[in-house]
Image (cartoon, rainbow, N blue to C red; front, side, top):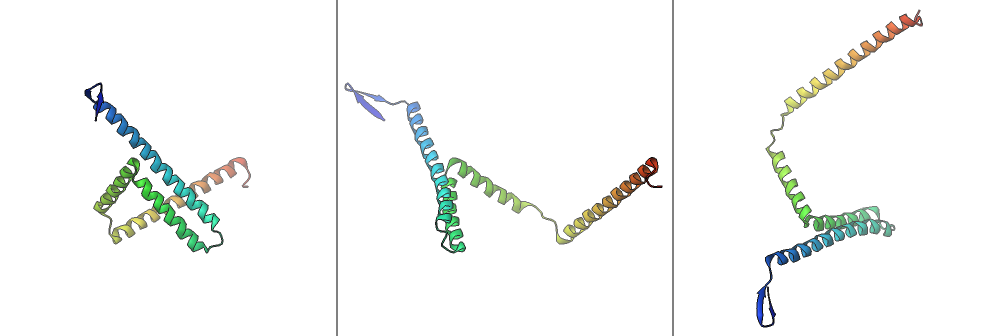
Length: 141
């Protein structure tokens, strides 16, 4: 940008242009977040305002407004990073080698067996300590 002052031209420093762009970017971000919050509030208010409607229609209305709020929020800097993170998580989850059905069943049976074994062991310890205490206190005679 150039400005003419007393017949001379001056170029605005890039620093001041960056400050202006950053300021307008912050305002736009705040406006997007405000709009998203207002949409959620409007969805909740609409859900109760239209109480004479069937429940399914009120739920669909709320979901549509909430989806719009999510769309607006996804266009913010934080939202863009969040969407990218979710996509990366999904991509990584697809790379995982999930266990086969027999492996899953075998692991489940081992866990159940250990839980049963520990339960029996704790019951035996409890019974033994109760037996000892009854003998020491003379209440089991």
